Structures are given as structure tokens and as C-alpha cells.
Length: 70
Length: 160
Image (cartoon, rainbow over all chains, first blue to last red; front, side):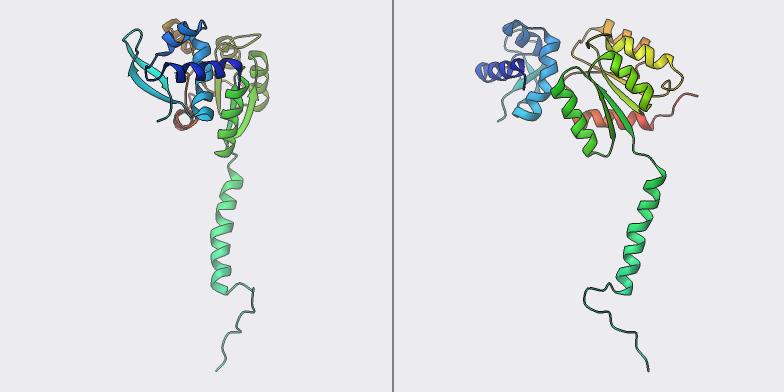
């Protein structure tokens, strides 16, 4: 798993119970959104994060977010 | 009155032999006439490429992979895949330019192309569709969801 994937996984667990959309998660980590989206698949399949549709805790818009598995 | 000889231990009965012949030989004949679908996965992210390749291989596809735009075009021309899953941002040439080259060649004109990207901009979608992509999908796309789209494209009638 790439260093970016590890960093994003760590951030998702750190942010929980808040949910950040991909745009806000990328901004929080200082990376580009498409890079976060590119590693998201591995985080879902290998790490067990879930892709859900939620209201972002930061921008308050509804969108896809990565959340830790329940 | 004569009776049929009883089968020896380990020897298949006549009914079992018939069942084996009908259940085993027929599907084999059918399978041999139809080649497995060929899919090209073009993505510069190793994890993503390997994951999709592993999944589609397990689902009975013949999988070809490419790590950049140029090798994606080469692989497409060599293997003439049924479906191509193309990433947008790749080294050498991007996904849209690769699709243009693939669609410009008569051999791969009929290959179905899915552009899979983390860029959600409308201009990217329009560019992909204008270049000849059949479908625009955004990352992350789970393998089973992608397979659904792949199979839908395979069933769609090809333009003459």
C-alpha cells in the first residue's frame, strides 16, 4: 500500500466520527482530490473502509465519504 | 434369465457414465467455441491495476494490463480487447489521447472503452466522450460495480 493510502486511512480514522467528503479530505491532507480518489479503492478493498453517502462535516454538502468499518 | 454385470468397486455405473458424459462434455464443447472476453486495464497506480486484474481474472476474463498511455495503445492494438478500462492521468500520454489513438485504428475501433478517473469535471467527461469513450466513471469504483458496467457494454450492440 502506498504512503498516501496509509496517510488517508490514518486521517479517516482520526476524523471519525466526523465524515469528510473527498474534496475536504484532500484539502485537509494538502493533496489533490483525484489522488485521494485513486487510493480510495485500495482502502475500501484492503483496509475495509466503507464508501458512504453522507453530509460532509466540513462543507455540509452531501457527497461520497470514506468511513471506518462499523 | 441373464442380468447385467454388476460394476466393480470404483468403476462408474452406466447411469453415472451417461451423466458424466452429458454434464461434462457438452459445456466443454460450448466453451471451446467461445473465447473468454478480453479486458485491458490501463492505470498507472499499481495497487488499482493489480486489484482489478486479480478480480477480472477470477471472473473468467483474459486480462491485459498497461501502466501508461503508450503501452495501453500498444496492448490494445496487439490484443484487441472487448473492453478497455482506461485511467485519465497516466504518464507519457493521457487516457483521452490514448482513447483517440485506439478509436482511430480500424482494429480497435469496436473495442468498448470506459474512462475511469478521479477528476469529476464536466470538461473531462465531455473530452472523454468526444474522444470515443463509451462510458465515463469516477473513482472509486468497486470491482463488482465495474464488472456490471463492463458486461452491460459487452452486451450492447456494436456499431457497424
